[in-house]
Length: 517
Ligand code: ADP
Ligand code: ZN
Image (cartoon, rainbow, N blue to C red; front, side, top):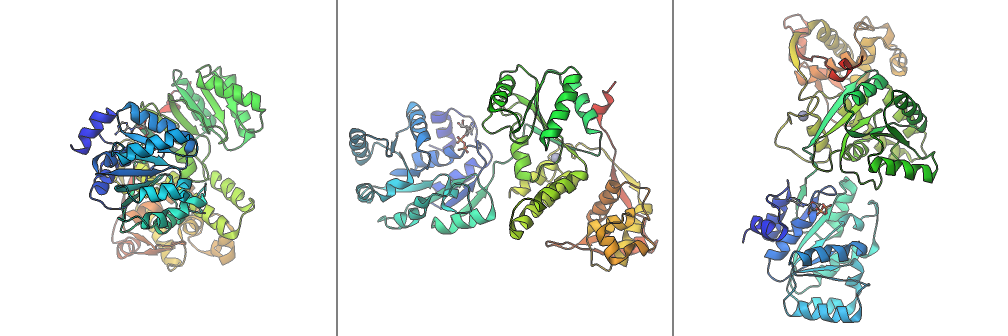
């Protein structure tokens, strides 16, 4: 039998989700692996199917004792020979399960990590044919993870003490570099293949709307989505209250949710939303933990969140039923200042501040990119999709035309040339815009001839054009933490007036605004 046959016969699904099949094949080829997939992506099948196909038994180490029974009951219902062994089992149950395992009637054995410290269990398992050891929630081995479990640190030695070393597979939804390194080292993985995948949510449409009248946008959007259920996230309680009042004033059925409200009031609002008594809820990021509403059709962010993890988690609450969902982020450059302020004024170490600043920069990059938004998110999470444009996000759908932009590109090139490759994009934009930023003043750049040369363009237009000039090869941007810009040979041609700069520019289109009376 092939993995797809098992998928159909035992689990009743017709096809694999992205990433599942590769993990399964790797384990069947008896190679260790580390698989990082988001919650709900379908990790269980990735080890259950090899567990059924490999000879002998598969041991699954899981920290969630409370879920173990449900998982195993479901498997048994699907006629999959599985058992669990943990502190909640009675003596009778344990005796019976050990004898079934000994008789070769069990394929999947779920255990808690603490069980590995049990001497009887250990010596029993040393006599059994274990093909595969699965470590679920593998981030628990890392102190950098969000729920460290000391007992996870003993797994590696336990596995090495088995007479024949089984294949080891670690699964988690946590993707930070530190945790990843810890998992690779502390779990004793050997020549493992690493999979990062399944982060894509194909039914979600992503869109960034920049520099718009946000309240007006939201009212217009609600007016054209009266049948749909949605969440609007705002950054502060004050903002939630203001928006809520405004939306209610316009006659929409709306609720609100933030930490300043009483527990009772919040619970009531959450229920009204869950049971479709209200159509839309305005909330801070306090809303969402544990909400389980599958038919949310849109998520609008009134402000930019602090990082992509938060954004994707909140946006991901749309379309959980598999139906269409729209995720719109309303962006204004002021949001950056607010988030910076929050980072600087939160009690963190310098190192932590730097980390959060980096994450914020990536979030800003999302808001400003002209490239595919889905691609941006997936590559942030470490996925390498084969395509570069998804064809179904606000940027992919954006209509672009080619225009002669020499009048803006030439001053950009001149400015970069003037700065002699020592500064980055922000400063170049500030100078051309004529902004008296601290750094401009510090270096006395307000005295440059080019200072304010593009003051009749918006900051965003200048920035877009600088970015595009890098993409088009007029400028070159260095790697690293503080990327600097320098002029290329092509850029020099434009500067010398020997080349015209033809650039792709976006046609501004905001259909929702047209709906405003
Ligand atoms: P995770 O452990 O990654 O959070 P689960 O393994 O619990 O996710 O799977 C989430 C849900 O997706 C489950 O209901 C599971 O049955 C379902 N699922 C997994 N793989 C597939 C598939 N190939 N086709 C359809 N549904 C799937
Ligand atoms: Zn796209």
